[in-house]
Length: 365
Ligand SMILES: Cc1cc2nc3c(=O)[nH]c(=O)nc-3n(C[C@H](O)[C@H](O)[C@H](O)COP(=O)(O)O)c2cc1C
Image (cartoon, rainbow, N blue to C red; front, side, top):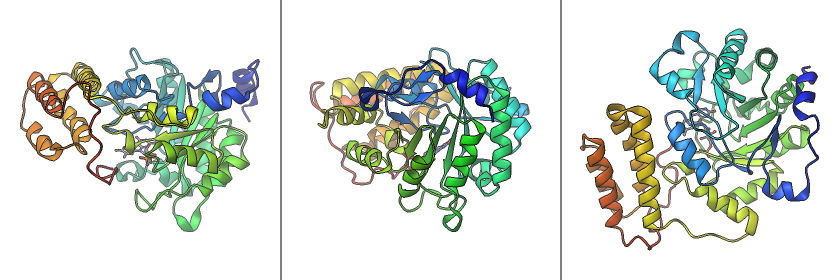
């Protein structure tokens, strides 16, 4: 099915070499992704400013937050921000979610008309808001519907379509292998698999055996996702699953430099230093200004608070500072307070202090 589309996308591209396998990311249609370490789509987190920052700091691929499949929602400010890719590096990838094949196909077309170069379908989100409408990972229980959706979206757009999903609806019904086979037959160009079932939510630990089984069973690239929070974990997951890339979500919140740390480790087998205080002042300062410009002062001030909270959560005095930042009602004052806090941690040339919290995922979901 849809072989013509795949053949066109892959036509004439040279075979992968050993060097590519080490440094280059997987190929998705006509695009070679920059490396093997991706930032995960996270609604309310991976907006355009944060995606740009993650890519600047080494993420090889970024997927935008979900765009609703319901056309009535496209005109809302929230949706229009989610599909605004101005200045973003290629390939611009938009995630869509929904439970209706025709509506999703229409949504995919709408996004491609507005510049999306890859469409990613989300069947991996356990959020009630999404799953109650039989979308996200709730879909996984209905394999016929999955096939209809994937066929419809792949047929609707001339760009590659990728799929992000979980290992199944629940542990008694892990059907990732069946879904992967359906996806490959439908012409899906890459799979991202989070090693939890829908029923797991974010509980317990991700398991990677199912990801390894899927990777062994399909010929399209597979991206491993779930609980990857250190360079060592990334290397281990790549090695044990054979996946073509890893995707990092929560561990990048407030720590976008994790991407260059992981890519450095994968390439050299050694650790690179974390950022200096001076560098974080500059990175975080630029992130805040980009954030205010993207959302406007009113919304920007409020939504920047959670990012600031993540940046400082594991730093000395971070909890106290975070409480204070929530009382500041002006963007300039917020930016200045963040800068003063960072200056208080040491000189610009000092490395950012190591985490004081042993738990990286306290802020999750
Ligand atoms: C706040 C938050 C929002 C998320 N939103 C989405 C989303 O919009 N689409 C999606 O496919 N996954 C979403 N996810 C799931 C992540 O992409 C990822 O699969 C999950 O967090 C596991 O990866 P991690 O352990 O590296 O965080 C979200 C996760 C979090 C924590």
